[in-house]
Length: 177
Image 1: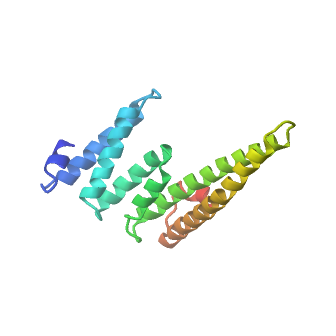
Image 2: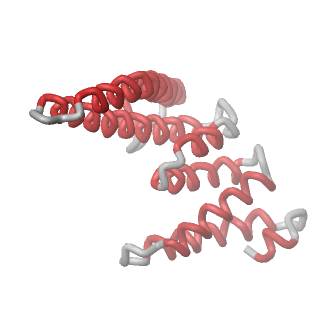
Image 3: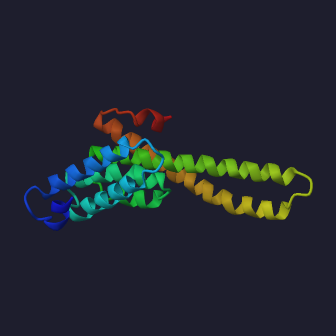
């Protein structure tokens, strides 16, 4: 990581940064505790650095694909989506990244709809604050409709890219479903 950050123009700097990123990923995977904050923070910071420093390179595309699940797990789907836009349209990594973002958006939609259903049930109970609950429902439903449309659009685009590339991996089946 030191060579990649301190000497980014040097031969092998990208390779050094990739090795450091791979090492942080191994550290993350090896940690069996629920506290993986150090490894997660280092992975995110280094992946962002690789993307910014060597934008447009295959290494940057790989770093984005590494970065996306970590951003999604932190609830930073919008930021993850912005990184996907930096992946070239014809890159095979773009389809995988889009599918991950689409699946995350779809999951957020389902969680939001469950919350709306819960509010609707609460509104049916005696002594419920019906006006307050109806206001929450009315405010949340348009957001969720937009989230649903965005998720469907992203998933369809990702699935189409994979079909065009004639490559199938473990992300295509759940995304298509």
